[in-house]
Length: 222
Ligand SMILES: Nc1ncnc2c1ncn2[C@@H]1O[C@H](COP(=O)(O)OP(=O)(O)OP(=O)(O)O)[C@@H](O)[C@H]1O
Ligand SMILES: [Mg+2]
Image (cartoon, rainbow, N blue to C red; front, side):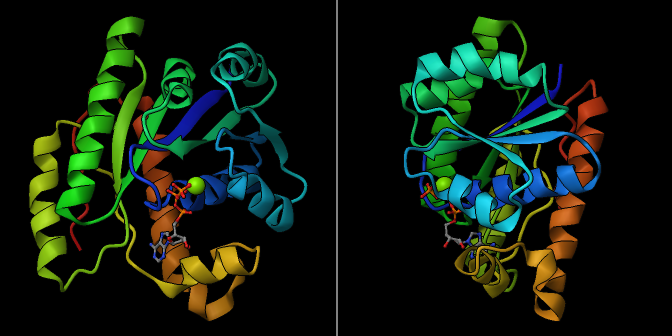
């Protein structure tokens, strides 16, 4: 069975689709058979990936039933399934958490974002109790501005959340450009270089995470 990695959070605009599209393209680029499941009714990530990497399989699953029935079948056909979840802790998000192996929680660097991710972590905990273990969960700090007090306060607070913290992504124009142009940051040339490097670091951490038996936090300090 392939690995099912879901992007979820209770808050919108935190980078779920940005990470989902790049992760799917990165896994495919590594030679792993990969599909993106777009579970968000907005369909943003399936449109984006269709433009950026038309060879990658795309599935739009919009209801809890579709997710619970079809994701396990799809996971039997691919090495990696990336699920882009909707914003919020709807029944769709809860269904996604019942099938995923790993839930990545992108989170912006503010107190409001921290509160939102705490709610998401609580719902991940419900799924873990129901399933007697999975999904693993990890926070992906996003839109970091390292010189800013808010970002520093955020990074100081995240270890208390009780989930591992992966390498963060800085606030960078390249991410907005990539979606605007229907492409990927590593195709933007020199202006996409820094984003490419930090995404690669994040994705490499994920494969480490796959083999971990204990959830040791690995906070990225810049
Ligand atoms: N690190 C970043 N730096 C700059 N812009 C970013 C970054 N990450 C995401 N963005 C931008 O923020 C916006 C929201 O990102 P994205 O669509 O990935 O979030 P989302 O969580 O999927 O949102 P939604 O809840 O609406 O589905 C997009 O315009 C995206 O280009
Ligand atoms: Mg999205």
